[in-house]
Image 1 (cartoon, rainbow, N blue to C red):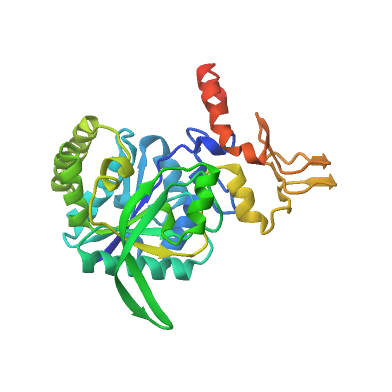
Image 2 (cartoon, rainbow, N blue to C red):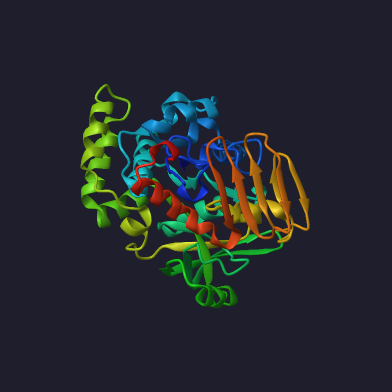
Length: 363
């Protein structure tokens, strides 16, 4: 009944352009420090698991970069998708391999691009969610108590308390999942923050492998059949051929839409371990700044009367600012990005515009 981590590392991260690109996505970039986001996540997982039980799921375009970034990762634990089929396929692929190695395995899905401040509490909550999944026989979600009205995250609405676990100094409570709420407008997000039953949804899933696969069978039966073929072929000479054929037939859909939003009876564990989705440049500033008005700088910078900015130079050029407030300024070898911090989500639209104009060299 071992715990396996399914580390999802195949995304493209268009909102962190121009640093994140198709062949060098955000999880393979040192956005928050000297380590890449992926390596930071790997180190966090290694604090609670042996390398043999961390499965990294990615695509062929990124596989070699991941091997270089994680030289300690066992070769057999780099699971390379033959083609992108969204997160349901990625999670199912990881679960199928975990179950092929341990039919009693429990799995936890981990995104490679999140920030966690309190790693000790992070692991305590994961282990508690593991207990909740086994006790309930259901999929357990970890929800993060919101600290401000974020409009870029989805939310979990908790139902009634189902049970609790005693711990030093009190109890850990486990609730039913009443439903999900997609990215709200600001007024709705403010309402969510003011009420106890709403949590940020980091799509942090903990479940017994067989329970997760039963959910696939119920809601994505065609995908489940293909995942079963992959599981049965794992470790055999026919594995790569089976994998390629199966993935070609999987219909792309996210784990949220394909499984979680259809599944009944799930449980949720509220948590507070200093989590943030490093999903856009404003989030990078907010994560690193400490205070709203602090500048966050990488590279050389000189300023006069400037505050609340994110200023990154990846080429060594000096960034000089005068009277600049709450802005993002990023400079790479071939791109300069300038945008108000509160418009950080619109960077994705710039990438879409580049695609329409077929300016592939910048993608």
